[in-house]
Image (cartoon, rainbow, N blue to C red; front, side):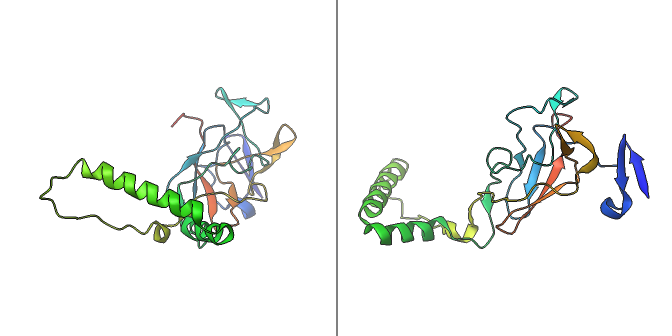
Amino acid sequence: MGIVENDIDFDVATYGEKTHDISYVVHGAKIKCTKGDRWARLILPKSHGVFLRGKAQMHKQDYIPIINVQSMGICSASIPSEDEEIEEIEEESGGGFFQAAGDAIGATWSSFTGLFRSDDDEDDSIDIDLSAAGSICKPEIVQPWIYTNEKVFVDTEEALLSCSVLTCLNGGKITILDDGQSGA
């Protein structure tokens, strides 16, 4: 049994009974990953030739990391932190370059923060462990969007819907927050 809502024919078994909020997705839609700390825009570098409210409509195959799916801030997935990656590179290279670069950055930072302190100020610096916060989000997606409209095609591919979902290999589930049609 299907439901027709906003000219979109839905299969109730796939999408459930609540279909009135489902819409087509266009360039600039907002997306969010369950492992990321912020939303990002869904990007379509080149139009497929179909427009909705003056914006390029997207389809099932628009899932390519960085090209279509941008970084969503800091990833909380249990992937190696940048510190762990740097340590691995240092071990392989003997550590010389990274040690010198780290020392130079530390000295520069001390000089910079010294501009804002008087001689009477105590050292109230705070050590922040960035590795505990996660790593920079680098989407790793190898399969197209699911829950697309199997009856409407954009450039021979199924149309992307606001209920469509992507899975990141880092453990995140990427969903669409806003279809992009209103320009929000």
